[in-house]
Image (cartoon, rainbow, N blue to C red):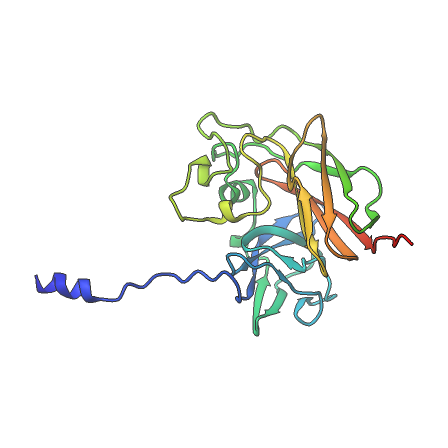
Amino acid sequence: MLGLLLAAGMPVCAQVRYATGQDVVPVFEGWERNADGSFNMVFGYMNRNYEEELEIPVGGDNKLEPGATDQGQPTHFYRRRQEFVFKVKVPKDWGQKDLVWTLTSRGKTEKAYASLLPTSELGNLVYQENRSGPSDLTYPEEPNQPPSIEMVGSAQRTVKLGEPLALTVLVTDDGHPKASPRRPNAGSGAGGVALGVGRENPVTQAIVRLEPGVRLGVTWVLYRGEPGTVTFDPMHVAVVDGKATTQVRFTKPGSYGLRGYADDGVLLTPVDVRVVVEAASVVP
């Protein structure tokens, strides 16, 4: 009885969920081999906020080293855990060096160290396990190549504030992975199984994902932002007859980097568009 009383009187420790005010942590996801002998270092991040999205411009607060400060990293950070966001190609003679991504936000500096450790090599099974793709995990793994994506029209666009911008891409895929009848979709949780109330995992937090019932799709994100917000209608687009189209609107003039990810449920291929938004014409 005494033990029950003591247990009842102990404080309950629960994880604090912060809507805003927290920093962003860079994450090294692993590395890939390229056919030419070079390697890709793959990065993601963890925005500790449950609601707030942050902007961290390239520079002292958002840099990769050694090499150029700007190596294609994002400056706009969506909430929570975002995996496999970008890749940095390093030469085949990279050796045992570290590629370091440093982010400073909310007064904190965080670093991700990328190296060619054998245990960090990425393969299709790793992507499928983390992204909860539509097929079953099998060994040997199902053959799968990443989808291809190509912009229709220029990758440099100019639009007046208030005017919608249509973006169309051409997407092709090898038809893998094959959907398993035991996995209804990958949109609701790990393995397509609905999650418990209030629970989140990287699949449910991910911005880049397929909508339920979609086999091949494109997700558009604000990759490099400021000074305004960007709205995609829709953000997640199913590929139909090899095409996917979305409409984009901007709230302020400026220069924006948009990224579209072709997604087969496991592997991703990005395409980038730079958009200059000009002030609306003043009618005299």
